[in-house]
Length: 128
Image 1 (cartoon, rainbow, N blue to C red):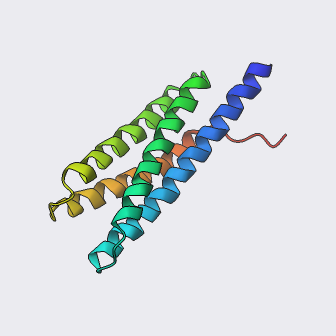
Image 2: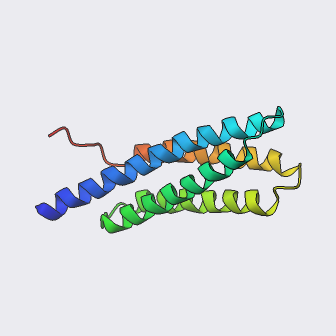
Image 3: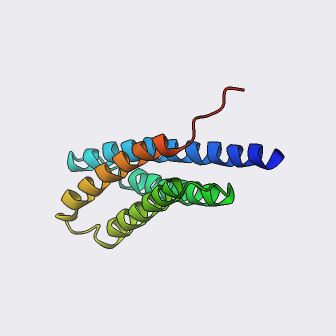
């Protein structure tokens, strides 16, 4: 019985990591847009991207450590991590190219929607 509660706790923490990814994605959007209006937010944009990457890795690790049998949850968590790694890589490699912002924004919206759908894939938190 104790392993079930520890598994539920790990999934609870993974859920919080996904919520952090949602908040960081919205923050990324605001700092990214502010750069196009002349504000110097490049360092905060990069730092929140790194935090989001850590949150995605932690979410994936926690889901695997929970030993859940839910393959949808596992797949969606690794999908979120993959999308964030691709987005982060694009931001690092193509930062000096102005056209990348158009693709970068579309992928960010996909990450946000995927993370919101992932929240629904987690089991409902127990009220006990």
